[in-house]
Image (cartoon, rainbow, N blue to C red; front, top):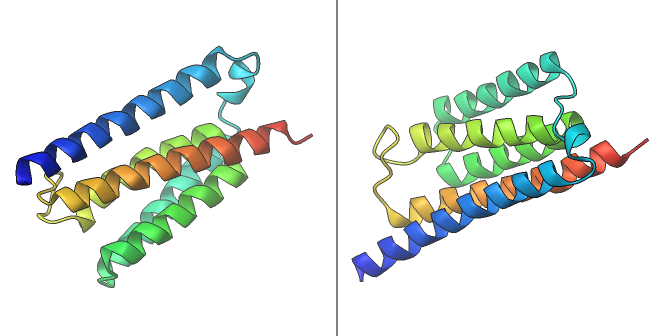
Length: 143
C-alpha cells in the first residue's frame, strides 16, 4: 500500500507541475500575455515577499501547526495576488511552497517523509497557483 500511495502522490505532484506549466504557457501565448507577465512594481513584490516570510517566521516561531500555517500562507498568497498581480502571486507561491517544505513538514529540510505531507504541499501549490492566476487576471483586467 505504501508504494501505491507514493506513486499516487508523485503522480499528483507531476500533475500540479504540469498544470502550473500549462497555465503559464497559456497566459504567455495569449494576446494579453506580455501585459500580464509584467511585474507591477518591484518594490511591491519585494515587500510582499518580505511580508510572506514574516508570516511564515511568526508561524514557525510560535509553533503554529502546519495546517494553520498553510491556511495563513495561502491567505497571504491570495491577498498578494489580488494587490500586486499575477507575477508577484506566482513568485510568493513558489516561496511559500519552499518555506512550507523547509520549516513545517518533518523532517527539517526539504526532504518530506510523509506522503500525506507531500499531497498537502501539492494541493497548496495547486490552489495557490490557480488562485493567483484568477486574482492576478482580474487585477490586470481592471481599468
